[in-house]
Length: 298
Image 1 (spheres, one colour):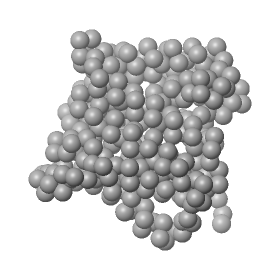
Image 2: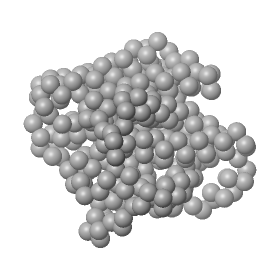
Image 3: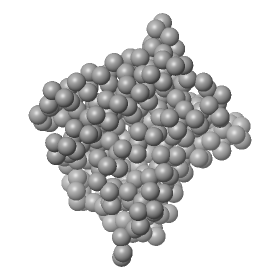
Protein backbone atom coordinates (compact mmCIF):
# COMPACT_ATOMS: atom_id res chain seq x y z
CA UNK A 1 0.00 0.00 0.00
CA UNK A 2 1.21 3.50 -0.81
CA UNK A 3 1.91 5.77 2.19
CA UNK A 4 -0.83 8.28 3.08
CA UNK A 5 -0.53 11.82 1.81
CA UNK A 6 0.54 14.61 4.20
CA UNK A 7 -2.96 16.07 3.90
CA UNK A 8 -4.52 12.82 5.12
CA UNK A 9 -2.17 12.72 8.11
CA UNK A 10 -2.90 16.38 8.87
CA UNK A 11 -6.66 15.75 8.74
CA UNK A 12 -6.24 12.78 11.08
CA UNK A 13 -4.33 15.01 13.54
CA UNK A 14 -7.03 17.69 13.35
CA UNK A 15 -9.69 15.02 13.95
CA UNK A 16 -7.86 13.80 17.07
CA UNK A 17 -7.52 17.33 18.45
CA UNK A 18 -11.21 18.05 17.86
CA UNK A 19 -12.36 14.80 19.46
CA UNK A 20 -10.19 15.07 22.56
CA UNK A 21 -11.01 18.77 22.92
CA UNK A 22 -14.72 17.88 22.99
CA UNK A 23 -14.22 15.38 25.81
CA UNK A 24 -14.26 17.84 28.79
CA UNK A 25 -17.46 19.45 27.52
CA UNK A 26 -19.05 16.07 26.84
CA UNK A 27 -18.15 14.93 30.35
CA UNK A 28 -19.70 18.03 31.91
CA UNK A 29 -22.91 17.43 29.96
CA UNK A 30 -22.90 13.73 30.83
CA UNK A 31 -22.48 14.45 34.56
CA UNK A 32 -25.82 16.28 34.50
CA UNK A 33 -27.58 12.88 34.50
CA UNK A 34 -24.94 10.24 35.26
CA UNK A 35 -22.74 9.38 38.21
CA UNK A 36 -19.00 9.51 37.32
CA UNK A 37 -18.53 5.72 37.31
CA UNK A 38 -21.71 5.10 35.31
CA UNK A 39 -20.70 7.74 32.78
CA UNK A 40 -17.28 6.13 32.27
CA UNK A 41 -18.84 2.67 31.84
CA UNK A 42 -21.52 3.76 29.37
CA UNK A 43 -18.99 5.77 27.37
CA UNK A 44 -16.67 2.81 26.98
CA UNK A 45 -19.42 0.26 26.41
CA UNK A 46 -20.27 2.30 23.33
CA UNK A 47 -16.59 2.58 22.37
CA UNK A 48 -16.04 -1.16 22.87
CA UNK A 49 -19.01 -2.01 20.66
CA UNK A 50 -17.76 0.28 17.89
CA UNK A 51 -14.24 -1.14 18.14
CA UNK A 52 -15.63 -4.69 17.99
CA UNK A 53 -17.30 -3.84 14.68
CA UNK A 54 -14.09 -2.30 13.32
CA UNK A 55 -12.02 -5.24 14.56
CA UNK A 56 -14.37 -7.68 12.82
CA UNK A 57 -13.68 -5.98 9.49
CA UNK A 58 -9.99 -5.24 9.99
CA UNK A 59 -9.03 -8.45 11.72
CA UNK A 60 -7.57 -8.38 15.22
CA UNK A 61 -5.66 -11.45 16.38
CA UNK A 62 -6.05 -12.99 19.81
CA UNK A 63 -3.51 -11.91 22.42
CA UNK A 64 -0.97 -14.28 23.90
CA UNK A 65 -1.91 -15.49 27.38
CA UNK A 66 1.29 -14.08 28.86
CA UNK A 67 0.22 -10.59 27.69
CA UNK A 68 -3.25 -10.65 29.30
CA UNK A 69 -2.12 -9.14 32.65
CA UNK A 70 -0.30 -6.38 30.78
CA UNK A 71 -3.36 -5.63 28.63
CA UNK A 72 -5.52 -5.35 31.75
CA UNK A 73 -2.91 -3.05 33.30
CA UNK A 74 -3.03 -0.86 30.19
CA UNK A 75 -6.83 -0.85 30.34
CA UNK A 76 -6.78 0.06 34.03
CA UNK A 77 -4.50 3.07 33.60
CA UNK A 78 -5.75 4.30 30.20
CA UNK A 79 -9.47 3.70 30.71
CA UNK A 80 -10.68 2.73 34.18
CA UNK A 81 -8.63 4.81 36.60
CA UNK A 82 -8.05 7.67 34.15
CA UNK A 83 -11.68 8.26 33.25
CA UNK A 84 -13.26 7.65 36.64
CA UNK A 85 -10.80 10.09 38.24
CA UNK A 86 -11.38 12.55 35.42
CA UNK A 87 -15.17 12.36 35.74
CA UNK A 88 -15.13 12.83 39.51
CA UNK A 89 -12.64 15.68 39.17
CA UNK A 90 -14.72 17.51 36.60
CA UNK A 91 -17.58 17.76 39.08
CA UNK A 92 -15.63 20.63 40.63
CA UNK A 93 -13.38 21.91 37.82
CA UNK A 94 -14.31 23.77 34.65
CA UNK A 95 -13.96 22.03 31.29
CA UNK A 96 -11.22 24.42 30.15
CA UNK A 97 -9.11 24.03 33.29
CA UNK A 98 -9.64 20.28 33.19
CA UNK A 99 -8.23 20.06 29.65
CA UNK A 100 -5.08 21.90 30.76
CA UNK A 101 -4.53 19.76 33.85
CA UNK A 102 -5.04 16.58 31.84
CA UNK A 103 -2.31 17.69 29.41
CA UNK A 104 0.22 17.77 32.24
CA UNK A 105 0.90 14.02 31.91
CA UNK A 106 4.38 14.50 30.31
CA UNK A 107 5.50 16.18 33.54
CA UNK A 108 4.61 13.05 35.48
CA UNK A 109 6.12 10.87 32.75
CA UNK A 110 9.45 12.54 33.50
CA UNK A 111 9.07 11.75 37.19
CA UNK A 112 8.20 8.14 36.33
CA UNK A 113 11.23 7.90 34.07
CA UNK A 114 13.49 8.97 36.92
CA UNK A 115 12.02 7.26 39.98
CA UNK A 116 10.44 4.10 38.48
CA UNK A 117 12.52 3.30 35.39
CA UNK A 118 15.74 4.92 36.72
CA UNK A 119 16.30 6.92 33.52
CA UNK A 120 18.67 9.88 33.54
CA UNK A 121 16.83 13.21 33.83
CA UNK A 122 18.69 16.34 32.81
CA UNK A 123 18.66 19.63 34.70
CA UNK A 124 16.65 21.11 31.81
CA UNK A 125 13.91 18.52 32.26
CA UNK A 126 13.80 19.04 36.03
CA UNK A 127 13.36 22.74 35.35
CA UNK A 128 10.52 22.01 32.94
CA UNK A 129 8.79 19.83 35.52
CA UNK A 130 9.09 22.53 38.20
CA UNK A 131 7.76 25.19 35.82
CA UNK A 132 4.90 22.93 34.77
CA UNK A 133 3.88 22.19 38.35
CA UNK A 134 3.84 25.93 39.07
CA UNK A 135 1.53 26.31 36.08
CA UNK A 136 -0.71 23.54 37.44
CA UNK A 137 -1.07 25.40 40.76
CA UNK A 138 -1.89 28.63 38.90
CA UNK A 139 -4.61 26.88 36.86
CA UNK A 140 -6.16 25.24 39.93
CA UNK A 141 -6.08 28.49 41.92
CA UNK A 142 -7.37 30.59 39.03
CA UNK A 143 -10.26 28.26 38.20
CA UNK A 144 -12.02 28.44 41.59
CA UNK A 145 -9.87 30.87 43.54
CA UNK A 146 -7.21 30.05 46.13
CA UNK A 147 -9.88 28.94 48.58
CA UNK A 148 -11.44 26.69 45.96
CA UNK A 149 -8.49 24.32 45.51
CA UNK A 150 -9.78 20.92 46.58
CA UNK A 151 -9.63 17.24 45.75
CA UNK A 152 -11.36 17.68 42.38
CA UNK A 153 -8.32 19.28 40.79
CA UNK A 154 -6.07 16.68 42.40
CA UNK A 155 -8.20 13.90 40.91
CA UNK A 156 -7.68 15.32 37.43
CA UNK A 157 -3.95 15.30 38.14
CA UNK A 158 -4.37 11.66 39.20
CA UNK A 159 -5.94 11.05 35.79
CA UNK A 160 -2.86 12.64 34.19
CA UNK A 161 -0.57 10.42 36.30
CA UNK A 162 -2.60 7.37 35.26
CA UNK A 163 -2.18 8.35 31.60
CA UNK A 164 1.57 8.61 32.18
CA UNK A 165 1.66 5.08 33.60
CA UNK A 166 -0.23 3.88 30.52
CA UNK A 167 2.31 5.35 28.11
CA UNK A 168 5.23 4.15 30.23
CA UNK A 169 3.91 0.58 30.24
CA UNK A 170 3.20 0.79 26.53
CA UNK A 171 6.75 1.91 25.81
CA UNK A 172 8.62 -0.48 28.08
CA UNK A 173 6.60 -3.66 27.68
CA UNK A 174 4.79 -3.75 24.33
CA UNK A 175 5.79 -4.01 20.69
CA UNK A 176 4.25 -7.31 19.71
CA UNK A 177 0.94 -5.78 18.59
CA UNK A 178 0.00 -3.21 15.97
CA UNK A 179 -1.72 0.04 16.95
CA UNK A 180 -5.28 -1.11 16.18
CA UNK A 181 -4.92 -4.40 18.07
CA UNK A 182 -3.36 -2.78 21.14
CA UNK A 183 -5.98 -0.01 21.19
CA UNK A 184 -8.85 -2.50 20.95
CA UNK A 185 -7.59 -4.70 23.79
CA UNK A 186 -6.78 -1.70 25.98
CA UNK A 187 -10.32 -0.36 25.60
CA UNK A 188 -11.95 -3.78 26.03
CA UNK A 189 -9.94 -4.62 29.14
CA UNK A 190 -10.55 -1.20 30.65
CA UNK A 191 -14.28 -1.52 29.95
CA UNK A 192 -14.35 -4.96 31.61
CA UNK A 193 -12.85 -3.42 34.75
CA UNK A 194 -15.53 -0.69 34.70
CA UNK A 195 -18.32 -3.29 34.89
CA UNK A 196 -18.26 -2.84 38.69
CA UNK A 197 -20.40 0.22 37.95
CA UNK A 198 -23.03 -1.77 36.03
CA UNK A 199 -25.63 -1.85 38.86
CA UNK A 200 -27.89 1.19 38.48
CA UNK A 201 -26.69 2.10 34.98
CA UNK A 202 -29.91 1.06 33.22
CA UNK A 203 -31.98 3.28 35.50
CA UNK A 204 -29.80 6.31 34.75
CA UNK A 205 -29.98 5.60 31.01
CA UNK A 206 -33.78 5.60 31.16
CA UNK A 207 -33.97 8.86 33.14
CA UNK A 208 -31.28 10.85 31.26
CA UNK A 209 -32.59 13.64 28.97
CA UNK A 210 -32.02 13.44 25.22
CA UNK A 211 -29.33 16.15 25.09
CA UNK A 212 -27.29 14.26 27.67
CA UNK A 213 -27.72 11.01 25.76
CA UNK A 214 -26.44 12.66 22.60
CA UNK A 215 -23.43 14.07 24.49
CA UNK A 216 -22.58 10.62 25.92
CA UNK A 217 -22.96 8.91 22.53
CA UNK A 218 -20.55 11.53 21.18
CA UNK A 219 -18.10 10.69 23.99
CA UNK A 220 -18.28 6.99 23.24
CA UNK A 221 -17.92 7.29 19.47
CA UNK A 222 -15.43 10.10 18.99
CA UNK A 223 -12.91 10.71 21.85
CA UNK A 224 -13.15 7.14 23.18
CA UNK A 225 -12.97 5.15 19.94
CA UNK A 226 -12.38 6.93 16.65
CA UNK A 227 -9.82 9.37 18.10
CA UNK A 228 -7.73 6.50 19.50
CA UNK A 229 -7.79 4.76 16.14
CA UNK A 230 -6.91 7.99 14.32
CA UNK A 231 -4.05 8.57 16.77
CA UNK A 232 -2.74 5.06 16.14
CA UNK A 233 -2.85 5.84 12.40
CA UNK A 234 -0.91 9.09 12.95
CA UNK A 235 1.74 7.38 15.09
CA UNK A 236 2.20 4.72 12.42
CA UNK A 237 3.37 7.41 10.00
CA UNK A 238 4.73 10.28 12.14
CA UNK A 239 7.35 10.32 14.89
CA UNK A 240 5.79 10.43 18.38
CA UNK A 241 7.52 13.64 19.50
CA UNK A 242 6.47 15.40 16.31
CA UNK A 243 2.87 14.15 16.48
CA UNK A 244 2.62 15.11 20.16
CA UNK A 245 3.12 18.76 19.23
CA UNK A 246 -0.42 18.81 17.82
CA UNK A 247 -1.83 17.90 21.24
CA UNK A 248 -0.93 21.37 22.53
CA UNK A 249 -3.91 22.55 20.49
CA UNK A 250 -6.29 20.48 22.64
CA UNK A 251 -6.64 22.86 25.65
CA UNK A 252 -7.34 26.06 23.64
CA UNK A 253 -9.74 24.13 21.42
CA UNK A 254 -11.42 22.65 24.51
CA UNK A 255 -11.81 26.14 25.98
CA UNK A 256 -13.40 27.35 22.74
CA UNK A 257 -15.85 24.42 22.68
CA UNK A 258 -16.73 24.91 26.36
CA UNK A 259 -17.33 28.62 25.83
CA UNK A 260 -19.90 27.85 23.13
CA UNK A 261 -21.54 24.73 24.59
CA UNK A 262 -21.33 25.53 28.33
CA UNK A 263 -20.96 29.30 28.38
CA UNK A 264 -17.63 29.07 30.23
CA UNK A 265 -15.36 32.10 30.27
CA UNK A 266 -11.94 31.14 31.63
CA UNK A 267 -10.34 33.68 33.95
CA UNK A 268 -7.18 35.36 32.70
CA UNK A 269 -5.12 33.66 35.42
CA UNK A 270 -6.29 30.26 34.12
CA UNK A 271 -5.11 31.22 30.64
CA UNK A 272 -1.76 32.33 32.08
CA UNK A 273 -1.43 29.05 33.97
CA UNK A 274 -2.34 27.13 30.82
CA UNK A 275 0.42 28.89 28.91
CA UNK A 276 2.92 28.03 31.65
CA UNK A 277 1.91 24.34 31.65
CA UNK A 278 1.93 24.01 27.87
CA UNK A 279 5.24 25.88 27.57
CA UNK A 280 6.86 23.51 30.06
CA UNK A 281 5.53 20.44 28.23
CA UNK A 282 6.63 21.86 24.88
CA UNK A 283 10.11 22.53 26.30
CA UNK A 284 10.28 18.93 27.52
CA UNK A 285 9.53 17.56 24.08
CA UNK A 286 11.90 19.97 22.34
CA UNK A 287 14.73 18.90 24.68
CA UNK A 288 13.98 15.25 23.95
CA UNK A 289 14.03 15.81 20.21
CA UNK A 290 17.28 17.78 20.28
CA UNK A 291 18.94 15.36 22.68
CA UNK A 292 17.68 12.26 20.91
CA UNK A 293 15.83 11.00 23.98
CA UNK A 294 12.49 9.36 23.22
CA UNK A 295 9.46 10.57 25.12
CA UNK A 296 7.89 8.29 27.71
CA UNK A 297 4.42 9.68 27.13
CA UNK A 298 2.45 12.24 25.22
